[in-house]
Length: 468
Image (cartoon, rainbow, N blue to C red; front, side, top):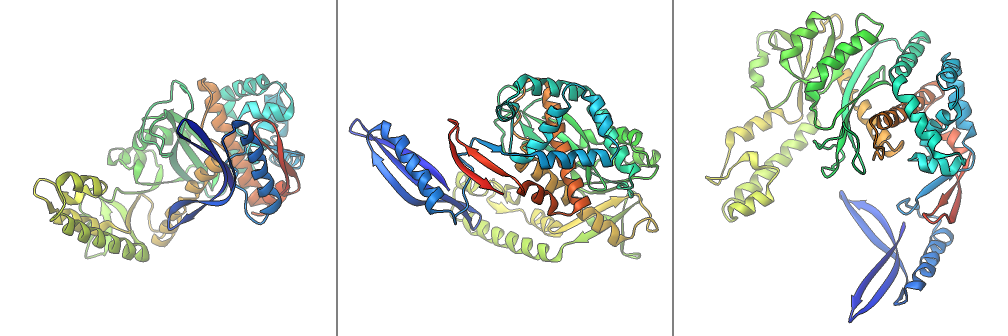
């Protein structure tokens, strides 16, 4: 729920209306519904009084309805010490506590606060300064300290997890995401394809590395880089960092490039990667005698999601039928507007359907080809498919980074601080994984749930104290 103030002008008089809305999704569409109209006025001085009445109604009369945080500017935890102690316990168990204090001799407490308060929706050093009462410059200077030792910290946590036997298989998952900037950003920030759907903002590309599902390494690149251009150099750097002769890399088709497969084979780097589905003819990969797939002599595996394929084929057939009918009655400009995401199926000049393109699309829907240099004795077909499908773990981590740990947007205007900010978020994600794996999935929520927090408005007014 949220409070909305609308105004309109009629005959030179401004009218204000204060209403309470609730937001929900129905059939994939966002719906804003009026819960209650609090009042109308032409006096701007009465608007704040009506807004207060609206909040009173939400907090006192509507406790059964989940409160939206859309108007909340700051969330101030009363006491995050339990989580801090848990994080220190993790550092101690991994035998890195003394190293952390040595790396941050003058600002270890601030480093711990940076990680901990991420779990309490604290999104900037300014708000962190407001909560702790410390000068904000202490947190900005902390980021300056983190940046030059980021790689050292990553290697330290990797080696600690390896020593404790928490990393055993060395299955490496690689994927990228983007995060955008408010303001001018840094020298790495550039316009590019935005996973955040913010094409109006400059961004950077973050390449995240999971080892046995622990987020351990990250690389930051210019915002206009393509995944395929980042892959080979990153993998070679990983080989120098990872203490395992035979690790396996899992990645999606965005990283596929046949030109560097020979280099991976030569360096004995093992991989499982998807092949772009709409390039080449799959029939050419299939050996009908052995009923196996191969691409340029390399082992390939076809995976089909039967239920998804059936659903996608139905949707495609329905779309094609709609296009066929509309081609007879719509103008070219109307067709382009209505079917801008399906223009590859249409010959605009002739106003006809591209039959071959449609048939090729039908062949790939719900199907994937995965290429690997692993032998069957290393991993069976079923094991490779299951492992490849586990790439969704890294997608979930991206969601957590952005939605729970507030990776985006980045407000820093220095390269060093922006990269350090990204690393703090990833380290918080690592802590989350360790807590969940060591103590169980509910442990983090239990630790956070011990404490209450206060919801503070932009003007600093306390409107709610809640127990987790």
